[in-house]
Image (cartoon, rainbow, N blue to C red; front, side, top):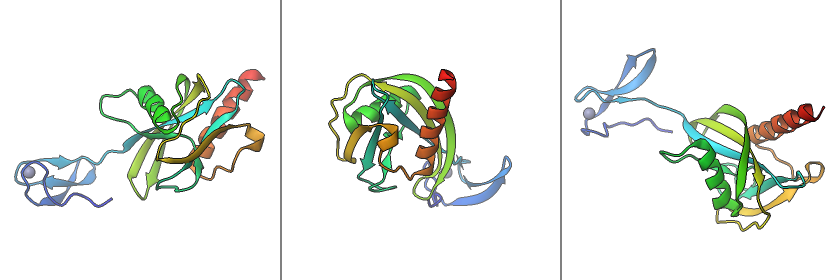
Length: 170
Ligand SMILES: [Zn+2]
């Protein structure tokens, strides 16, 4: 992520300045400050009625061709739960119900910079999967026979959800 070089308001060159405890780019002409905030992402840890986990194989960067949980960037004005279900539907055409918040996570991504990820446990309301262009394949897998997930954040979400479900049963 390259920092902005020019003011998006007045077009003048930005200058680095130490403001409110951080180095920021500011416009000396109009006073605009570039607050660099994390991008919010919603992730759906989706189970079917049999407790099998929905995984997709990604058809785009980052993590091209990796098995993953569905998810994506939130839109303005959207509740994270809505964004989570929207992304799930876009990628797999599945509809579902948010059951609970699994966790909120921070990651540094080389492609997008700071990410704030919100992960929900979702129950799919049907299993009629139709994938879009972002995905090579998708399916529900029993935990003991699922494809290897190698994205650390997604692994952590799957593990934390499983642990929470097991401690609830115990
Ligand atoms: Zn300006």
